[in-house]
Length: 158
Image (cartoon, rainbow, N blue to C red):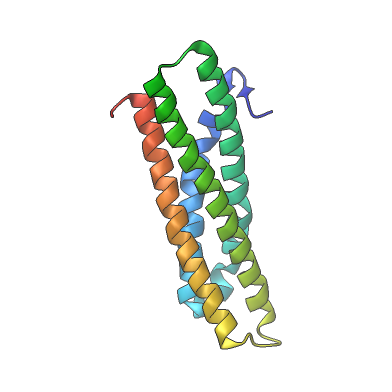
């Protein structure tokens, strides 16, 4: 399922979507956290991104594991395996932090939609905002590092 589509590695087909949607989720989460007056306007987009971005990172990671197995079967030097291992470690961290950001963003969205009937305590609201901002920064960092190490692995620019 995660190996190939039409002879092309799935990883190559989906990774660019993750590279776009994870930063969009991070940006949307930060805006949602720091500008409460924009929440009604961007809430639907943030909810969609909170679902789509983690799914994309999962598919990208799983397809990357399949591609890794395929590359190793062809024979790879020890240096090449180390470069790919670094890339895979960053990809795994990207997936987990993006999933965490998606979950926290969904929880915050649901709770703030409910907020109009029963306001959240300010401590809970502030805590959710802080967690969203931190997770957005970490997710952005890891998606950058994953992409950078992947590009170096493909183009050999170490």
